[in-house]
Image 1 (tube, helix red, strand yellow):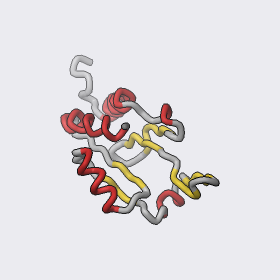
Image 2: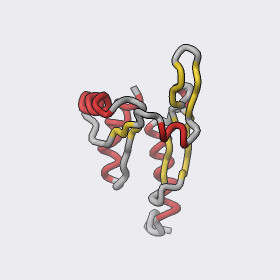
Image 3: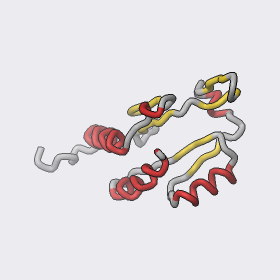
Image 4: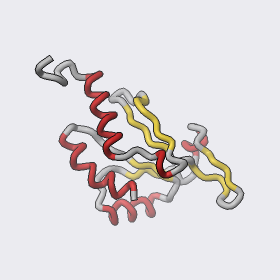
Length: 119
């Protein structure tokens, strides 16, 4: 559901020179099929061996599912520092397109002296 909304949001982001990327623990061929099915143009990255998940301490252990990744969303500044972090363990913790839009507005205000041409 959320990736479908982000796929719609990608065109709006392109106007502002912003980019999306998705990462999952699925194998690359599964990611490619999923990306194509959505019609997404942003990259889907694979951490099939879960090395990055372990490095970032995003592992969640479950008796029923084994080790899995806690779903996080990051808003990153151009230098890749984290502007905002969303923990989507519960679905309602995942960012909406509007929350991401607000993050981008805040980042643009920090980065661009000409953000408000009347200031």
